[in-house]
Length: 427
Ligand code: MNH
Image (cartoon, rainbow, N blue to C red; front, side, top):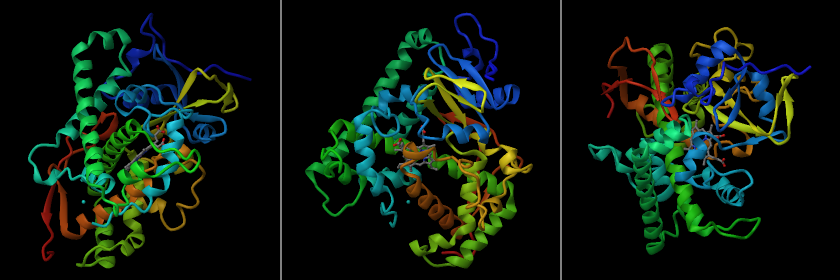
């Protein structure tokens, strides 16, 4: 029998919007999960969403033959910046398929041999150096991006009248968008003036490759959208994961020591080489466990292809967006056990990783719409962590600090500070 989905009491006109904190929308879902449980419904005026937080329900909606990604809420707002780039494209848009087919295989071997997350994707993807280490101020692109992401998160969780009235915020957003586009357009123009035939990077691929299916190339506009997408997606997520990782390892010092011992054993005092990466199993597990414990992306959204029922009793229609609360999934005790709220990298090692139930670990999203940069990000993170632990001693500026989080669309620690000193005897 079909049962109604619980819903917080709705108000006249603004319905459930007061439940949402526009500066940190996903935290509102965590709060509501504690009250309403694994499934509840929200009427956010311009969208009706069903929020799910258990492995059982995730496992159903991750079935791509029944549910597809639905860029709504903040992702829809972000289309002003990212257009039909891979991240914000609707599944039915032709440009998604084209870019997906052209770029899928380039991301794997993207040469990370030559290092902040932002600089990495700039350099490896487009041959552009942001030089974050060599400037006092954050690069203007990074500032514009942060501002645009925060505004997109707010716009999606404010009444439309308020968005309409906030002329100055809209103006500021447009300015930021145009500056970011300009930088990308300049990189494209520069590459066209000075071709780099030997660079197997994202930019060359996007400029030269044609889609195996349609034989068509990507349009200049779509290349720009995808460049901004990679800079946005490649920076926020990876840097947020680093912050969570160091927080977790410093709060659980035995994990820090084990990771450092692993680097000392595998790499020693020498130069980290690509062949070392597969041997850094404990560091890999620390990254995976960090992404389980609290990753930078708090939710993904899907919608049913046709009206359906989930959990055997909850009706989901095609006007419902299903918001998948990743923290709910990753802390579901029915999958992770009673120590789900502890940081324990060992749970993802030595065969246990392979034995996880399907769709239990989803920090990179799902299926065809899952993260195209996953392999790149995983490699980059293992390398960066190994190189840092090898040469430096990291400690918390305030050892009594307890995790507080904030959101700039992606989730990250707030006010977490580390101190980095050279390890004695290391060059
Ligand atoms: Mn990434 C999609 C998480 C690093 C580029 N990424 C996604 C999704 C998640 C995600 C979750 C699915 C979003 C959704 O369903 O709406 N991404 C991550 C995490 C990291 C990450 C946790 C690092 C840690 N992502 C990167 C990097 C890049 C990148 C690095 C590029 C350089 N991600 C993308 C793109 C998509 C995506 C592009 C959209 C893919 C598609 O829909 O075709």
